[in-house]
Image 1 (cartoon, one colour):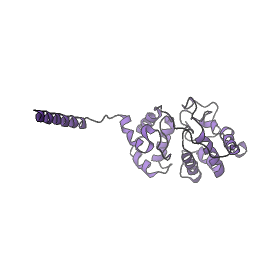
Image 2 (cartoon, rainbow, N blue to C red):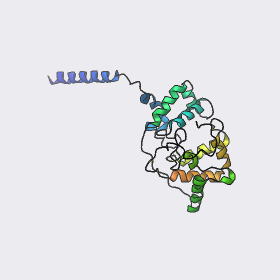
Image 3 (cartoon, helix red, strand yellow):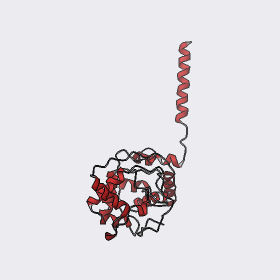
Image 4 (cartoon, rainbow, N blue to C red):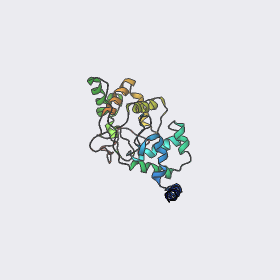
Length: 230
């Protein structure tokens, strides 16, 4: 009797496994977006190595513009370009909206390694820019809290120093481009390598404010023309 009970239990367990295996996968945008998290981390929170940036909570217009830039050749990363090459503008907009809607915690900041005077210089570039060199303050577009501005300007906090350095370097050497006029390429080329290091150290070391969401609108007209802005 015990042997029969064990056999019956095993049979029922096998049927349960088969039943669960046959359950259909839900065809939702969240399910499809799991392909992105293989590189960009769980729920688009960023990869641990800092190379693949956070997607969650960034303005939908910014994410959409970057998808177009990869698809249309303005940004150079073969894997991304191949993945999204067959996707329509409408689908890319939906995908951007999905990640923009995610409201998730941010990682802790990275401790800066620069002296106080150097950090102060980096902070001044971020908050004041350098009008004598036509360098606008980062806050003029990315918001007073540096959390981005709707609908298309990303936040600069919660990103690794390596990622920030890599993107500014890519703009300087032409590997990263945006729709003309490419304001960030112009700004990056006006910064020296030493200044880029100062700015990225400060940004990566800045904790997220109590409200980490992008600002709803510009407080004043942007100081430069950018093709990625509506």
